[in-house]
Image (cartoon, rainbow, N blue to C red; front, side, top):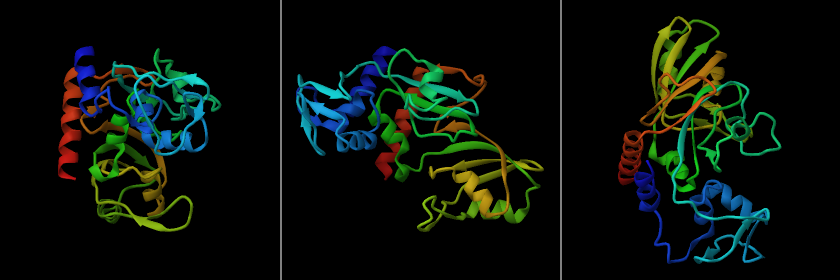
Length: 260
């Protein structure tokens, strides 16, 4: 997949002979997303040629960039893996968090999760070394689909199904205001179970939607992100995306951005 990967990683990058924004440099190097890069720059963790970086800074080829004292270099090889996350694993890169996803997988190069699944949820999560790609997948305005299998604590009703599909007003976790979730697709799969397809990624969204309607989520498993399916991947295992999956993923990202 190397030839395809190198092509993809450069399709949305500036000419390497030109300067680029520092947050994009860190994202392309697989350190984190652009948003997280901005947070690291703001906190003083990033230096360019030994001088603490500032927000909005640009870097030129050949400049020395460090994060927490460790030198950063760009890698042409794009990595995207699909991981079937078990319950109890935290979707964080922090080595100070017990049970973090990076320590669990032990992938040979630096990668980070694209978004998150809460600790008690299971199923598909993507990990990559390309911050730009991660940002494109997570961009809420692109309405990318994510599909879940959910079991709740009591039988579904027509009212519950309709309310979930139409949108549920949920309180933001900081408690400052409430927001209406986007309309979604929901299909009952059993007396107390359903599949749901969301196009937004509010934190713990399905659990909070169900709670607002008087239901408690017993199990929640993500089975699809855009065109990437969990399939028969065993829990606790990961696989590299196929060339066909990567091509389709890039096509879907480009299509969404062209329409947005």
